Image (cartoon, rainbow, N blue to C red; front, top):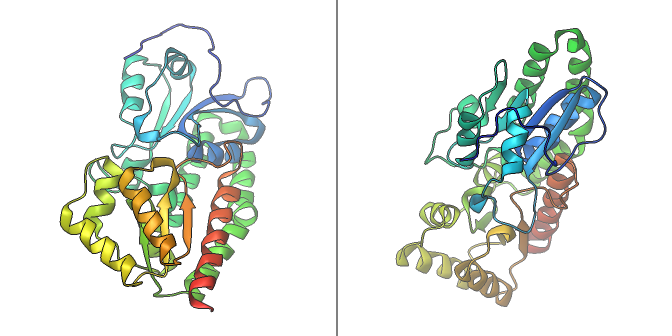
Length: 293
């Protein structure tokens, strides 16, 4: 693992908008948390996200020397944890910095390796992370505490308003509708939306972890599509495999609405809420087509 103590600033993977002189140097492993950190920090935080490519599988990310430089110069680091980005704590250990604060989201939420790591798809977890980022900013920069409080209030009450409204609409209008998903990425959101996610849990977990699903789980999923037990098919377009491509084709053949979702921001420069709201609206449209509600 790269160790670059004392190195100068490296090229940013996804540089934030210009921050004022003396702003906190913040590095975030993934851009979905990075977007939140940027909005919470405003011009008092210079936020750089490492994993930003919407066309690549984040699970397969390999850190670079530039990433090590970023870690070596960061005052605050946020990473997902729960086994999702094992390279991040290794980079931190290889590049120790006195006084640096670290937020491991999995530890905050109470998730460990082996649990579903896709915590940014759970609105309640998003709120907890946003609040913790604000708390950490205030600890790192006490004179600007009131500024960070205002940023947080705006994020929760204004920026997230369309996102929250879409969640409320779907959960009320489509409560209990049976749906499927190729991966565990959709589990937390499906629960919040009160949808009936009937895909075998073992199938979703296996696909998320890059292992082969069992023949029984594949057969069950095939039957759910063929019999039209599911009304909407949700798949992770960022981690497509021959198995998921085949299932998508079968769903389309049965005229079951198909909804792609991604692990990281799509497009890469979108805000967290714009990305999520767009996906929620696509899901709502698919549910409407399937149920005529």
